[in-house]
Image 1 (cartoon, one colour):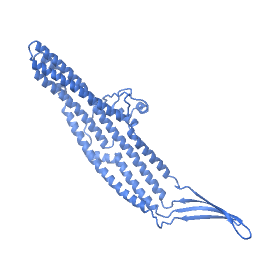
Image 2 (cartoon, helix red, strand yellow):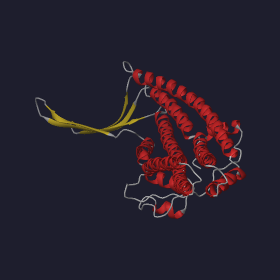
Image 3 (cartoon, helix red, strand yellow):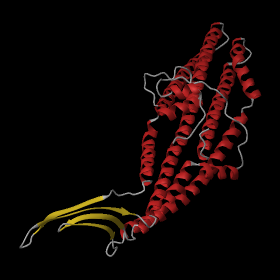
Image 4 (cartoon, one colour):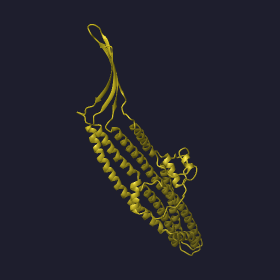
Length: 407
């Protein structure tokens, strides 16, 4: 049983069978990954196996009937005869073994489904983070292109000013170096974009021949998240790994009960039919397994050890969840504060300076080193804003994972 999540109807029906033919939003990328990722295959198989075992545990009797027969001559001095005996018996569980087995199988099914859900939540967070990195790398590549264009314009302006006798050779050489730095930054931005695209492609399960394009559907949320105690309570209630650990503990308890009850005497009921010296004999049979030597000591000891282990793992999982939620919330708050530094007025002013500074240098209103300083400040600020937005998107994805949410 898969966890439901919001998607468009079109993408749900076509994500597995056909590659994306349009730009993917972040949520569409998550949907596609959940539909195609090979990371979920083993967990899905485990869930189906647990479902089959759950169905098997619901059988009224676990053992098949046993048919027995005997035939042979009765040898006597006066006359021989043929004796025949046929019987059928069935082993029954009369001490609650079936209920304990069903309880253990149901808890194991819950645990396997919860582990599948946990992988889905983790995969969704990984896809959102990879999407944020690819989006940021594409914005950085665009910025690197703009930076190279501006550096080229500054180099041409320096040459024009040198020809007019208003600039020195040092300015021209410096402008040439800046142009080379801008070209190198573009190469690095292109490399990062390629790596980010490959990372997302792997998570989506796409072939190299399948197209991959993304689009920014929404800005990261800047609203304050709920308080820490609220998020912790939500995480402990809905995180799939907590559910899986609790179900594993329930499974261990049920298996311990089953091991204890399997030490009780087994009962076998049946009926037999025989012919002896011309007489027909019908009898009911009752068999008891006497637990004299083997009282299921090994299984009981193993079940007790597993019960202690599962209890400890459940408590450790809850502690880890509390720590992860606290760290994820702190990371999200820090990232949100970093984004807030770049207010709209600040970015607009820097962008305006970036657009005007080359013309100001060409007109002799600023010298070349002022040009470099203003341009570097503006570009660094835009890079910082892109990095801050990326960190906020990644932090919000990790916070969703920490509280066990697919959204």
